[in-house]
Image (cartoon, rainbow, N blue to C red; front, side, top):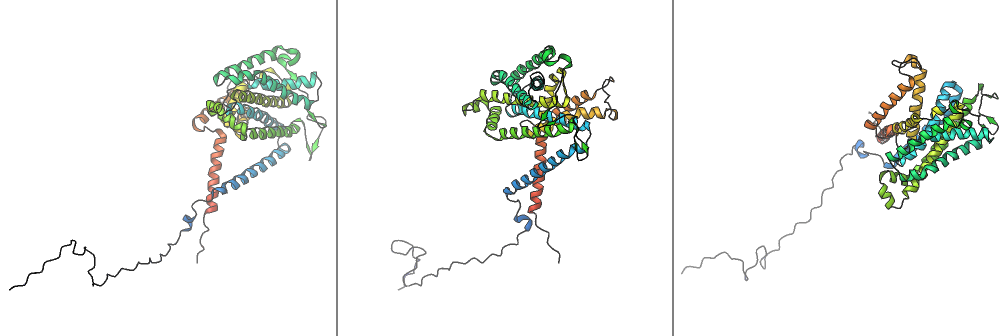
Length: 416
């Protein structure tokens, strides 16, 4: 009888599941966890280990550069009267007065977004008020200068209700009326303004020092006349005006002014009194214009109505556009460019092509200067929206990057 053929067991209830050891079978050995071999770190490349220095290193570099520029500017400003002739000193003083007025209109137009075409009116108010108060009323000249700035601010305050409610081209047209009103008064109020011929300007006398050619003053074997003495007064006034305006722009008023310029409705929602700020900035800008007018009168030594016309207001707009809207340094740079260019063209008209001497019938230096900085305005609007100040900022950032890269670059390995 044959034995039954064994069959393979199928997994079921009575059979162990697949993978389960049968009773009595040795337990399968569990492999021990493998310990990873210690990895050898790859040699780091020194150039890639510090690809960019710490961000905080930019501030010390910026501070050092600013201090260096400030120190050089102070030394050059102090040394200028000892080496340059009267023409350059007078040109520099014109640039200083223009810079003070440009800072004022930049606070209004550049920082707050209010267009003004009547800035020359407030320069005239400051200049003629100084002459009238010091000559006719007999006030001391420093007190007359301060009072003239206040009178210019009061004139702006009388117009401020209109400035607080208008904006853009409407305010520009309204301020344009100030130029025509001012010209009419200057030409017709002869007992006060002197009419067409204007009036002579009394020299400033401060702490016993008269800002005139007499009495004679010699410093380090260099005779100091009126221009040399006014040079230091102009530097002091410009520095004070720039520091004050910088403080305004960096503080809460500056933030409110920029918000009004960019988002007027948002500024009102945030609780910023828009009309009050507009009126206040207009008054402040008028006082800057009055201070610039006083300095212009001291440099000219004669005030005439023709100088304070429409072209002067357009020059100030060109200054802030070329220099950079909303920037104190840009206002100073634009004022230097616009005010120095006619003087330089006049000085070197015989050596320049297409520029004729004044009165010869060709393109005068003043006309050539306006053509050039008109082209500069177009170029700035198209290619440099930030003006000269924006260009300087870009160049400064590039220079800072180069310095930071040079500081973070590894030292070259010594050859063996």
